Length: 141
Image (cartoon, rainbow, N blue to C red; front, side, top):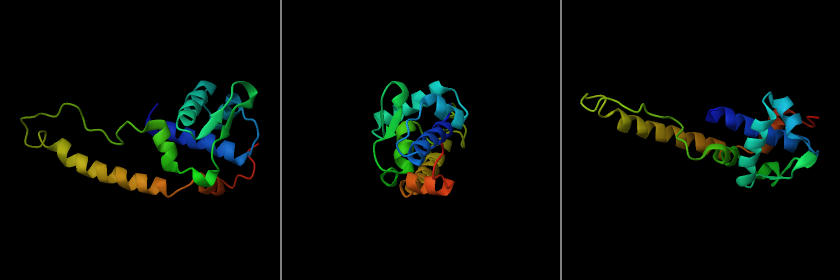
C-alpha cells in the first residue's frame, strides 16, 4: 500500500474515533466505514499507537484517541504512518555518462525537498479537529 493510502486511512480512523467521542469502535466496524479489510485497520492503528496518537486494547474496546483532536496535526498522522519514505523518488539507474542522467537526481532532490517542506508545513497547520469539522461529523455512528 502506498503512503497516500495509508495516510488517508489513518486520518479516517482518527476522524471516526474523534467524531464518535468515546464509542467503542472495533476494527471490523471501522473497516466497513473505510472500505478495507480489518487487518489493514489494525496495522495502521498499531502505527498510530506506536506514535502515541491512540491507545488500544484487545477485543471490543478497540482504540481511543490519546489526545484531543485539536492537539493532533495531520503532520503527526503523516509521520506516524510513513516518516521514513521519501515523498518523491528518483529512478534508480539514470545513465551516469549522460549529461542529464548524471545530474538529474541532484536537480530534482532540491525541488522535491522544497515540495516536502511545503507539504509538511501545511499538514502541521491542520488539526484533526479541523478535518472532523470539515466532515460535518457530529456522530459517525
